[in-house]
Amino acid sequence: MFEDLTVLDKIENLLEERNWTLYRLSERSGISQSTLSNLFKRNNAPTLPTLKAICGAFGVSMADFFADGKEGTILTEDQEQLLAAYNQLTAVQKESLIQFLSTLHNGC
Image (cartoon, rainbow, N blue to C red; front, side):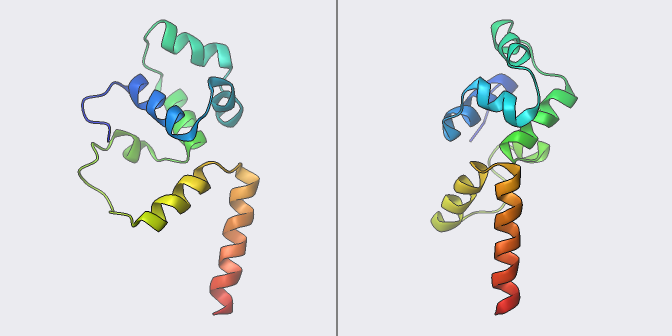
C-alpha cells in the first residue's frame, strides 16, 4: 500500500482514503491545523509524538503505518468495509460500537 512513500505521502494517502481535510485531522489528533499545514508546506516529517497522535486519529498503529503492505492480516471485503466505516467514527462512536458488538457477542 505504502511502498517507497514518505511519511507525508502516507499521511496524505490516509487523508484521501477517509476523505478528510487537515482540519478534521486536527480535530481528531489534537494537533493544530497550522502545525499540520506547516509539515506539508515545509516538507518536514512529523516528530514521533506528533506522528503517534496522527496515527491515533486515523485509528492505525505506528507499526501498521510503517508496514510496507506485504505483511499483516489479509482482510475479506466485508472486513475492509467494516474497518473503513470504523475509522470514520469518533472516539465516542467507536466505544459505543465496541459495547454494542460485545453485547451481541455475549448474547450468542
